[in-house]
Image 1 (cartoon, rainbow, N blue to C red):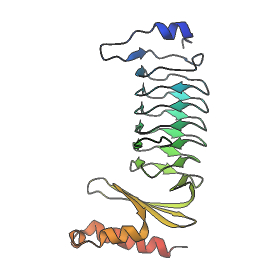
Image 2 (cartoon, helix red, strand yellow):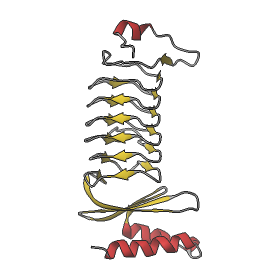
Image 3 (cartoon, rainbow, N blue to C red):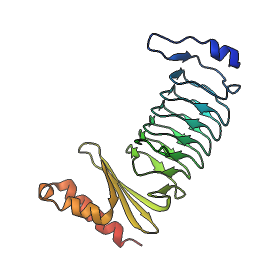
Image 4 (cartoon, rainbow, N blue to C red):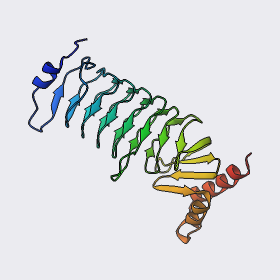
Length: 218
């Protein structure tokens, strides 16, 4: 695999859309990357790398520890992230991404919406309220949610109607629920599903029953 120098990276031209098209290679000699870089698959990056906004990464890229990513970055399948990476708002991750210890999502002061595809794995990550997850994402008990409250247990229900996943997240202060666009407490969840428009909705009835069972489970 070719290892790029700073001079070689600087010399890469931009396409008609303004993106710097970076071939597959080892970019571990580069510490700072510009906005609008488009990296092909299986690129390798060093620790402490800093990426600008709107960067695009192909599948199976590998990132070292403490990398920082700007807003609206997109990542392909099977990317691997070391611990202590930080992501600004509106990052999008495709399925199969694997996140190591200490990753942080939605730390930006701007409008934050991280979207994770199916089969992402989170290990001891800090996850804020505005993250949306695919149906096959996996979380370890070291993950932290809703104001960095440690996740104690997680139960997932996948609806075949619309492909919506509902996560019942148990932590030290109670039960927190993510379902589609809803993020809130189990009390707020029950209030929502008790509205008249859900009276004849079978999925809503199942979710209310699950909420009762999760609350009773020790």
